[in-house]
Structure formats: C-alpha cells, structure tokens
Image (cartoon, rainbow, N blue to C red; front, side, top):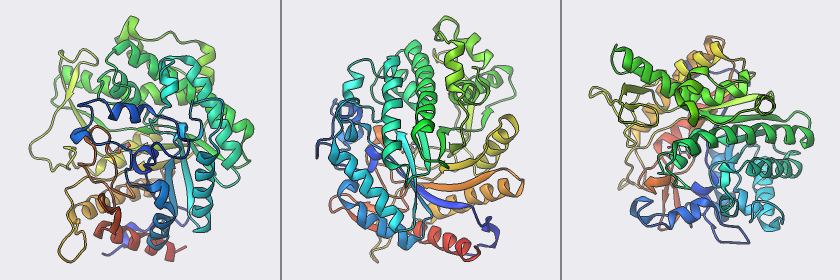
Length: 450
Ligand SMILES: OC[C@H]1NNC[C@@H](O)[C@@H]1O
C-alpha cells in the first residue's frame, strides 16, 4: 500500500502495546503474588465465558519468540507493563527474585533486538494483599506504589528510558469503583472520586521517587485515555453532559497533573462526594513530567441522562457510523482532535499515542492467514490523522498500536481480538495478520528514510 502520505519525521517511533495481565499468563508461577484480577476473574459472572488471565498468551514463557516476531516486524518500541505482584507478591516488602529476573530478561531481550522498551508500572493488576488493606482507597497504597516504582527504576532504568506510572487511571476509578465492572468490582461514587485523587497522588509520588533514583535522561509520564466529547444534540443539557464526561474522564487527571488543580466545575458538580484535597497533595500530583501517553480509539457522543446518578449522561450511538466489535464508532479524526486539544490547552513536553487499534472478528482462512482488511483500514486512517497532527507542529513523538497480540480483554475475556498478531489460544500459535504485515511495511518505509 502506498506510504507517501504516511511519511513521518526520522525520530518518530512506531511501536505496539500490551499489558501484563492481558498477555503474560503464569498467574501462579515462580512466586508471583495474587493480583486483584486473578481474584476478580474467579468470581462467577464477572468475566464473559468465565475466562481468566491464568494463561492468557503465555507471554511469560514465550516472550523470546514473540520478540523475534517484533524484530521481524521492525518495531521501534514495545510497550508493556510490570505485574506489580510478580515482583512484590505482597505489594511491599519481600521481592520475588524470579519475578524481577523475568523483567530483567525481557528488557535484555528487547534491547538485544534493538527494540526500545516503553514501560507502564500500573496497568490495573494491583496486588491483592494491598487491596485487602483498602487498595487505592487507602492512601498508604500511593506510598507503596512509589516505593515499587523506585525499586523498578533502580533495577531497570539503565536499559529502560520511558517510564509511565498508570494506564488509564479513570478506568480503575470509574469501572473498578463506580460501575463495578472491573476489579475490585465496587459500586460507590464517593469511592470512585477518592480513588481518582489517590491515583493522581500515587502518580506524583512515583514520579518524584523515580526521578530521585533513575538514570539521567529517563522520561517519566502517565498514560491517559482521552477522547473528543460531542453533545448528541444542540440542546444545552447534552452540551453540559458532554462537558461533564470530558471533565471527569479527562480533566480530573489532566488538570491536577498539568495545572495543579482540579476542574472547578467538577468539584462543584460532585459537591460533598468530591474528596478532601490539600495544596501539598496538588503540589505532588503536579510534579512536572516529560511526556504524556494518550490512548484514543474513538469519539464519545453524549446525551443527557438524569438517571445516570454518577455523571448524568450516556453514550449515544449514531446509526450512520461504522463500529468495531467493541461497539465503538469509527472516527479517525479523534486522534487529531484530541492531540490538537491537548496541544492548545496544556503545556506537554512530548506526546505519544500509546494505544490505538480495533477489535474485529478475526478468522484463520484456509490459506492459514488472517485477512483483517478492516483493521488495516482502521490503522491507516488513524495513522494519517497522527501524521496530520505532526504536520500541524504538534509535538507527537510516537504511535503504538493496541495491540501486538490478541489478548485478554478484561470483562469481555478472549471474545475480542485487537492484535496485529493472531493468537490461537489452544495451541498458543502466533499468526501475523495482514494488518501486522501492513504495519511492518509502514515501519520499514519510514525506517528507510532515516
Ligand atoms: O479496550 C482496549 C484497551 N483499552 N485500553 C486499555 C487496555 O487494557 C484495553 O485492552
């Protein structure tokens, strides 16, 4: 496929993203402690088809072969997360040496393959033992997270330069503590707001801790899911509902981190449910960071819905849009619009798209290949929007596709495939999909211009 319209600056990096609980497996192996997702998956009815991350893609054992595929594909970078309980089975205290050995080996293999590791410390799999002490509701967890982050930085930052604290903290707060569809499965608005603040605090403490102990030249940041929000109609009620969603899901993280304060409209809207916040805490949360990772898959169209006690709105699904298997509307401009908003409203040194991709129903054809043309079209259209942002002078430094492998999609189990590499779970066989081959050609084209 012609790539001239997808020519990026020489220093722009292309990668692929994953997360520990979704790909590693080895959930009870080599001294790893329980995570809240290990226990959540065992609760009847929580996960579609009763799926778990017990084995997932068996990346814990197959990572060397997977890195060979990454190298053949030409990935510049691979984003992964650390399973906190694999290194600290109890969340604090005693280190599980075999867990640390795994991540040391993973990083060594990536570097040997000339693939830049891009690391996330919390992609939702909180140690169960800390959850038993209140989890993110307990501010002590923020301190434990900073200690864990410092430890990982001391051990890996000679080979890992990119460090992000949380992935999509809004999911932990809202899906995990308000909607109850993610671990730990709580349903309490006040809890969800307190967790929002405690996650922000943990982020700031971790950045401070890593900056004290990590190598010079490290880049520290966070990965946030940020979407463009649209009102479903011109009514003021829908406009206000869209603003509330943008306020909670985006600005309750962006504003304290980059502006040192929570959005006033959110503090006002949530009233006495909003947590107590001190100036000292805001000072920690707004510890300067070097980069912001953005996960953006689609735009969110919101209509007012007073029955939604949390935030007073619901998503509107226009009939004339095309949708992915996640029932997400396909709207490639979402990347350009989000990047433009961030560039205009915040002072962010570097931006990376850390997750963008699509779930579609995939099958292995009789020729043994996976002809996923819709995913290739999705990636092409969205990467074009990333290029548009770069051409407008927005400081976008990289694009990572979600995901390298088909993997465990949380409450939907293995029913959704996002990978550019197909995983036949019964055999763990990998098949590079047509979209993976296309992505590889795109990378090779850009690398040929460096
Ligand atoms: O839903 C697709 C992805 N979205 N961001 C977080 C990841 O863990 C999800 O699999």
